[in-house]
Amino acid sequence: MKNRLIRNISFIAALFLFAAPTLHAQQQYVYNSDIDSVIAYYTDKIDPDQIASYMQELENMGTRFCLAENRKEVAEWIQNKFIAFGYPDTYLDSFLMINTYQGISYETWQYNVISSISGHSRQDEIYILGAHYDDIISQPGNPFIIAPGADDNASGVAVALEVARVMKEYNYQPEATIKFIAFAAEEVGLKGSWNYAEKAFDNNTDIKMMINNDMISNNTAPEEDWRFKLYKYNEAEWLAELAKYIALNFTTLNVEEFVHTSANTDSWPFHHYGYSAVFLHEHEFSPYYHSVNDLVVNTNKYYAAELTKVSLGMLVHENGTGINVNGIAPILSVSSRLYQNFPNPSSGHTTIKYSLSKPEKVTLQIFDAANRLMAVLYDGWQETGTHQIIFNTSDLASGIYFCRLQTDNNSATIKMAVYRQDLTKN
Image 1 (cartoon, rainbow, N blue to C red):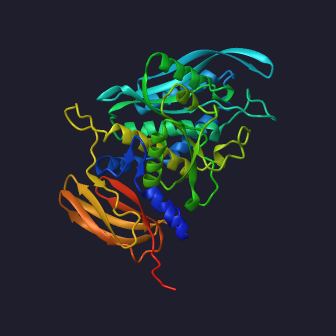
Image 2: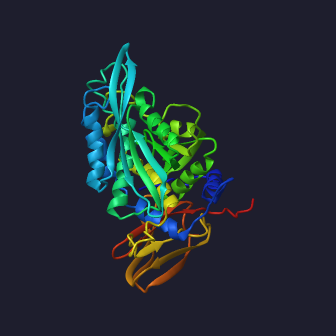
Image 3: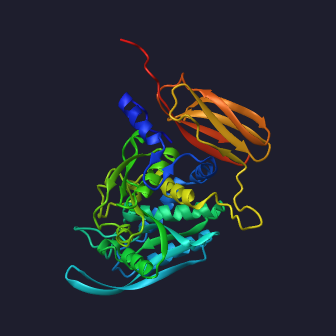
């Protein structure tokens, strides 16, 4: 994947601000080798083609309008997808909705899809990754017949599905309980998320985090300019800081931050009931919004994959290394770990550190934003333990680079920023 290129000194200054540890009243996010290497391991498993396939299958249903006859069929497809990934604790949480559409009153059953992976040590704490699965179209068109909703919001559902797939396929075991929720009837007043959040509040459910993805796949910008909108809520600034930390250290994305004050997306009901929530949204608003042309062919799966990494990284950051400390044996087996280089950004020398849990053949390489090989730092056999290499970056142009560690059964990549100091005196 390409990344942003640093073009001028002002951008460099901004990069320093983004890359530095973020301070606020509740949390300081600094690089932690144990957890951040695990974040890098899992985010590297996100597959853009899988994301596109989920979106395409949802689009192929013709309509996902919440009043259409196939609404339960859509919910059951999502339910069965989670079950197929290995989440037997997946069910439809139904609720009765009375709604007036174009002057006609409808009384229908709606279905939130809820899938869970139980925590091994903080089971009563809940972390939610959510998105709505319904769609609607404006005139011209009839949403009862067609409402493809690829970007709005098959893309958000695809995030939850892909994170669930990666966690299960690569044996991630969280400390707390993670719930993947596909909400019904968002387009007619956030009915699914209001129903769930209200019940959670009434039952004193301990929701620690709610991440909402809504429209995350529209992007036509050059890859070096990829960014997303991060909507934060008052009293949950720590969650926005965490999202920025993950995005700027584990993805190709830059961040534009806003305070969200409108009840127009599924994170709002959780904020209303006092839960920490955050809303992730594409930077370039889709021109196909609520139209029959909101199709997968008009989306960007690679951009969606980068935003998916943000949600996955946030969940891993708050839920540990994936090892069940109460079990007989670790569930996660990562034979090698690549740590973030320091200093980062660098203008001269930077230290790259990695560890091996067994003797392995190791290749450590540097690539530029266009995926061109710039340097081979090591290529050979190494013993168990922690190793480090001091890399001289002074011959590289200012910009974003990637350091890739390849072993027999694992691959990990970190993002590195390089800037050139102009010491020329006038």
